[in-house]
Amino acid sequence: MYTDTISAISTGLGEGGIGIVRLTGPQALPILHNIFRTPGGKRKARFESHRLYYGRVVSGGDAGGELLDEVMAVYLAGPRTYTREDMVELNCHGGVVPLERVLNLTLQQGARLAEPGEFTLRAFLNGRIDLAQAEAVLDIVRSKTGPGLEQALGQLAGNLSKRIAAVRQGLLSSLAHLEAMIDFPEDDVPPASVAPQLLQTQAELEKLLATADAGIIYRQGIRAAIVGVPNVGKSSLLNALLRADRAIVTPIAGTTRDVIEETVNLRGVPVVLVDTAGITATEDVVEALGIERSRQALSSADLLLPVLDSSRELGPGDLELVEAVRGELFRESGKKACVILNKSDLTPQVVGPQRVEELLPGVPVVRISAMTGERLDELEETLARLALGGQNVATHSVMVTNERHRRALARAGEHLQAAIMASEAGLPADFVSIDLRLAMDSLGEITGESVQDSLLKEIFENFCIGK
Ligand SMILES: Nc1nc2c(ncn2[C@@H]2O[C@H](COP(=O)(O)OP(=O)(O)OP(=O)(O)O)[C@@H](O)[C@H]2O)c(=O)[nH]1
Ligand SMILES: [Mg+2]
Image 1: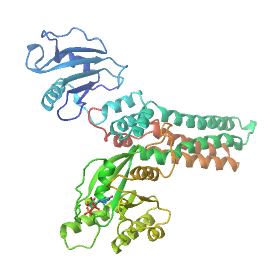
Image 2: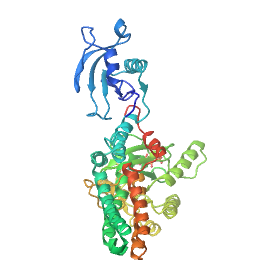
Image 3: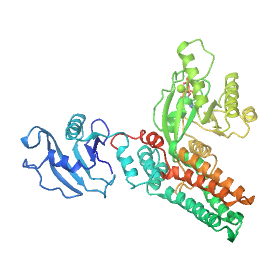
Image 4: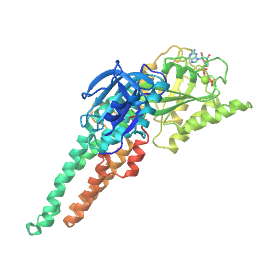
């Protein structure tokens, strides 16, 4: 347990219906006694835990002093709290000035301003939640779609941790078996006898690891670049997918000059759509800069959406663009693409896009009308499928949603593989057990049993202050 008490404004900055100043630590209750007065102006003799009190926050202690805000205050006695310590929450009028004054008063009373994520860090260090659960707290706050939130809530409830624990348990019992061999060599059971159990543990670990591709995408989303020559309907497509008039659309070529980014929810996958300036040869400086950004968007996107106008013959610019997309796909194997033949409501000129299919083999082609919304559904379906790597994913089952977890699991898998090989080669038991211990340590990095301070710092500095 900590000896110091921390305080922070836990609600978002700016005006709000209410705003909360939160404290945790041994001084939380004494500070509440000092600053809280009943509506009649009296000090409260006693606060019951988990009960809301109406009153005022005043500076100046018993000397009376200035009224800072009218509040609802709650004292939460540890360990039945978020941090397991004594906590106090002051529900103030939401607004920057009253909140900062109340916060400052708690600081004058001996609290220290909390670091980002420090409440959650305490919950972790005090053993209420493990590291994967602590990370889930941030994922909940940051979730962009329903499935993303569902995964984060499941992770906070310990679903991922339970699966990790099951794998760990498998390793542990193999390890116990091996230690017995080391301690009682006369029994002379060859290490190969643990191999079946290790293989089973490996299968479990791999099943979990296989969820990571889709899981990480549900949590983080992907970037999709809408690219094409001027006037093909890139901005119209952005607006259609957003169902909002976000970008300016005109019949004039070169309307979009700068990159526009907006996040959409495509079948539960958060997709950052990047609308770009049409790529063409130009003398115009502003347009040229926009085009440079379009090229950057192309190289930084995970999903490439070349748009072609199907009511015109393909021009050299279109083919150049398709070529550029092909280059990107070749350069980075993880990238995906979908060719969009827009303006399907007009008389088609691009009948069979053979040329495109030749240049981009295996890349889906979807015919749509950004103007009428025709087959927009089909496009959304295709994009979500591409984003998830073509997998059919059951979003309600446990997924690995975090790159850090994926890497730790993969490392555990490598050590486990080494253990299996050592065991199958009939090497002495301690060779096998060394690898098993390393595998256990890697798993422990996910849940936080074996974790370095530097990693904790890295994880928690992404949190907001007050979380
Ligand atoms: N008939 C028809 N017209 C469309 C469709 N999509 C876009 N347009 C029209 O095509 C013109 C250009 O549309 P934009 O969305 O501005 O095209 P853009 O690719 O963003 O153009 P730049 O930003 O100039 O590169 C506008 O007049 C749109 O109304 C479509 O599906 N059908
Ligand atoms: Mg545009």
